[in-house]
Length: 287
Ligand SMILES: Cc1ncc(COP(=O)(O)O)c(C=O)c1O
Image (cartoon, rainbow, N blue to C red):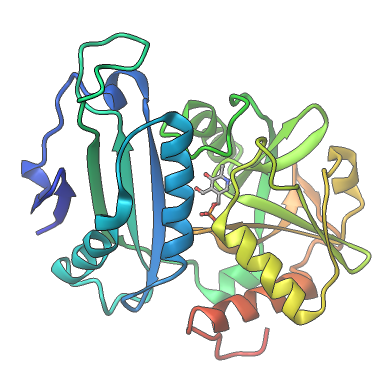
């Protein structure tokens, strides 16, 4: 039985109900987080909850996420996910139930807090080593995508464009700049330098992105945070996406053309190997 958390209660998913007047349902007025747990240990939970706090402040939703540490752990325990290689907890907070008006509802409106846990299956190392494919898609999102809003329609359309093209990822492009993926950040490698878009309001400040940056520092890989022109993608040696459910995912073909020499590159491999070590799940074979 899948047990979820809703507004202070742990209950079977079938019994969890949200009002049709919830502002999340009517207006996408809310934010979310997805945190990974590796064999029962949460990874970067503080960073995820800090980003959540920033989002709550930016949207002026009054809620103290302190209780959520316990909620996360209990969801893993209660759903027998502590032995899972990878599990995730999805958490969503909306402004709550109120009469539908665009402006904020009365101050005593109580936010809706919902969370569930599930097992996550990462691709096999064999398929990882073959690499993944992506397409570029116009970025049609709003101008504060650093807020992890539940309003994801442009991301949904972009992800579907990737599915329609028969590939794995969508790379969002705005004003000639390759910003990030529909659900992940991007890194390219050019002449031995790792490059990623600066943590501005035009990308989500991925927790995995910051882990990758730390790993690059520790491996002595030079790193630049600067915009990446879309034409530059034709001359990069490597490209990979990073994210909680993406981890580190190398792209070997973009828009049907090979990235670099069309194979998973050495920097992507070194970073992924270090990432797996950091989460306590090293890869047995040499990459
Ligand atoms: C648009 C976007 N960028 C980047 C990320 C990666 O963020 P994180 O590494 O915190 O999962 C996500 C994750 O959902 C995302 O939706």
